Amino acid sequence: MKHAVRLAVLAALLLMLAACSAADDAVTGNGGTDVNEQNGGSEKGGGGEGADGAGTGPDGAESTEGAFYEVLATNLRSPWSIAFDGEVFYISERDGAIVRVAGGKIEREEVKLAKPVHQEGESGFLGLELASDFRDSGRAYAYHTYNENGRLLNRVVVLERKDGVWTEKEALLEGIPGAVLHDGGRLKLGPDGYLYITTGDATEEELAQNTDSLAGKILRMTQDGDVPGDNPFTGSYVYTYGHRNPQGIGWDTKGAMFSMEHGPSSSPRGYDELNRIRPGLNYGWPDVFGDETKEGTEPPVYHTGDTALAPSGMAIDEEGNIIAAGLAGSRLIKLSPNGVVLDTLLENEGRLRDVFIYKGSLYVITNNTDGRGEPGDADDRLLKLTVK
Image (cartoon, rainbow, N blue to C red; front, side, top):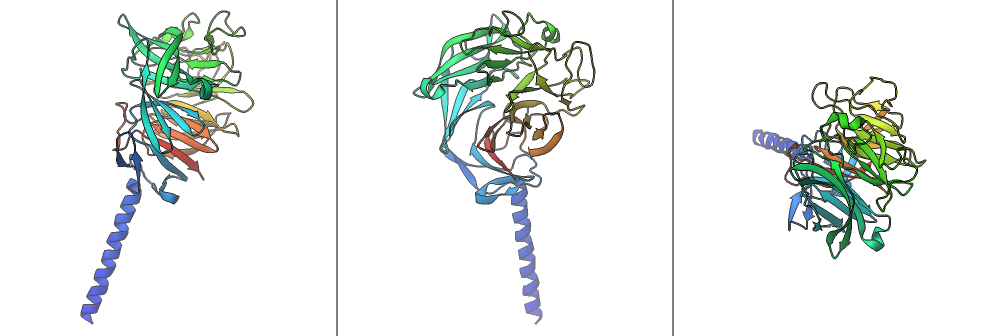
């Protein structure tokens, strides 16, 4: 009898240890692998840094706080922007490559530019936007930093993809002030068919208030690089000014435009903004930020206070809610158009750089390999997120 009791107790202890081990795997995100064709091996998808509350979702997908995700690509190198053509993704990498993701395979494709990419700090090969006729023409728009006689500048160029190689066809705009920090870099085609470009203040704050400078602005041009006749400043690409470092722009289904930008990073710190964008307006930097007001400047719809999100890419859903990817904040948040934080959709995956909405799913790229994050074995990754 005593021997039977001892066996029963031992069996119970073994069951408890197995349960604890399974729980540890769920918390750290170990569960299933995805194949990275580019590197010829399998990598664990991982639940990310900390991964509190993460586990394994249906069909092997990972889950985080009410959302399930699949890992579509791994081992990206400081990715910056997602462009999308049907079921094919094109992702820009800071050092000057474009990654094609299709059918579970990834291919890193060469980009040939007339002026080499200069990658240092926040600069490099940044925004990427496919032309409206990309499927037929292979044309796209890109924004990158270059070094000219020791000075960092940014340019907007037209690329053409042929046989897996992207070649510069023409430069639409050059000489945008650049720096190691605050280069802006987001490109988006608006519902009006024009190309919108965000630029940072290039660490020279006063340039944001100077409408003769292209720094600290949202710019607007035709797809051929001309100044639209209805731009607010005659003969100028400048659409709005007084921006510090905007990296997210988007439009709702009614055509209303929004932007997110980084606030101060020293003291005070935080005060990242969501702005409703209207042509010709002054958004205040560096004269005002947060709740400060000044005649002739436009206050933000929302700001983070002294908690930094460091918003980068953003998207707007069918209900008009803003989905914003945070770098320092390391989370994906949803805000109403009037600036109410509605939800945190994803967290514990480290820095998040860009987000794209397609057929009701959210596609997000992490940005943990840019020197500021803590990369996991499979970083950086493209995630497909399904929210409950």
